[in-house]
Image 1 (cartoon, rainbow, N blue to C red):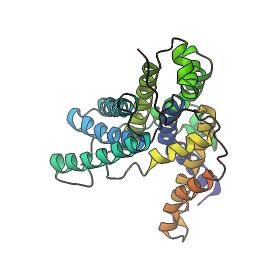
Image 2: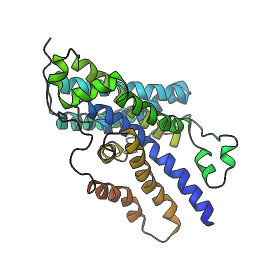
Image 3: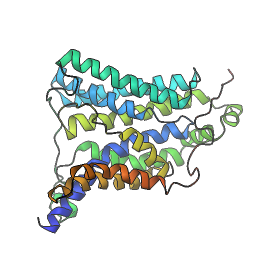
Image 4: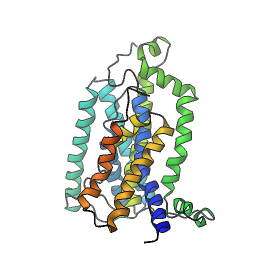
Length: 307
């Protein structure tokens, strides 16, 4: 295969594979910054992917399916927030418990609706698009060929969320809440209200990530299609210091690892080794996470708001 063609394919696949990781990680950033551990993102991605397929199946419109996936994921995120904020459930147990609940429910609904516990039938999906002129540029044009609108939206969200978190009153208050909710409360900030808003944003972005997997990259739901991206997003968030700019770079790194296993399939390398590549990158990335850069001081801790 021509080297230039191989590079173009790898660049295109890197952007495509990095999209759900970027969306889920930025969503997890909002949860983490306000003090809630985003371990439930895995379940949000799964329910978002499954609900998007259900919506597309029922309406024959993948865009309505995408909205249904976002709605289901948002509901799960708010439930996760309610368990942590109001019920004072341990953040790790609450997040992992919801992930297991979603996995079980999805299996039941798959069997009930389509008689299969592993996958859904094909549904209407969202097609990629080519950007005029930009798609004709050698090598770089691969980034603008056959990509999905959601991918461009994810990249656009990076500067928008950075501005929201570091240049607005909302972001300042969220960071104060994550570092010391008692100071925020005595300053008149409605701590729990801001936590729920952060979980709302987390659910929207994680649901969009899940819907991207099922109605953009594929046209069906397959059991385990999230491939632990929710957990990997936690590593990306830490590696990127809970900063959208850093998260973008880390997401592309993991996207490259995913893309590499596709590009290297023509070589005589065992497929098992290639499938291990993204997880090996995860382990190596954890070695470079030092201290608690960008992490909220009160992440995972309970706070009782005085009314």
